[in-house]
Length: 381
Image (cartoon, rainbow, N blue to C red; front, top):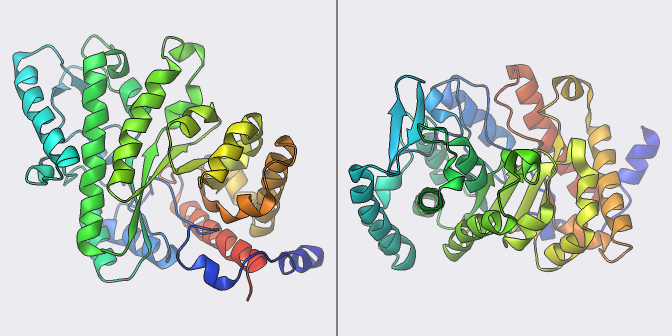
């Protein structure tokens, strides 16, 4: 422990002021929490995440807060399959085509003309969220440089939402466009809500893409890489056009060139289990970092209860340093260590919604402790 603490306090790249309005070595979290009381969840977040608060999914409050369901409001063609007790899409009905024309007109007005008259049609409201109003109220009453929001990613949604014949939406070219544009409107709505209550805060919009870890496998062998890049890029471009940062979260390893090609600002992944997966794409990561991209290292293992019970701050600090070293080594020194540190911040590996309350709270505390420790190491006291 003594050796660790000596090393922790020695290497310094930045002054403390460099951390004030940057993502460098800060902390936020991903997706879900196990809480059944929305206020308690929001209080935990704002108590722990004082620099980048986020709003959580609370499926324990209502099943409509599950990731694949939460963004259905206002999306044309959505139906409820009573026989199988699930939401589906219908892209063949007359009602769908009637709604589709209005939907595209709304998209054009909102995204291209910045006319927000109909934006609230694509809001996320109860029962699809119990926390966004509480989140916005907390933002309004504080001062924050960043505010994290999120949507489900288009690949994950498009391969999870099916029609009544079990055809995934991503394989339906027309409906894939509906989902991409629908998610874009959900993102714009959140960005505008944050601007209303906290004008100086930059929104960080995560696209949660757990299924990206399966991209390229036999399960999705017919999905073209260009289709995934195009879907992510369309949403990312609009997010950035509205003054926000775009991020993709994947709780696993993936073809990281898809995300770098999509032009997102932030790549977030399970760095506890798959830290070395970035090294296989060292060339792409070099360009990504040199163009200002950030790596959000998901180092707190929310997907592994046993590991979370055992892990501690020292372990996580060492994992981070080893991950950075591995990326630099595999780049053959083309990636500068200082650049990686400057463009790193931290999250848990995934959402904490399936964890017991005590472990979820431990995960939230650990990611903030890791942030504090790394800021202390690489900045001045």
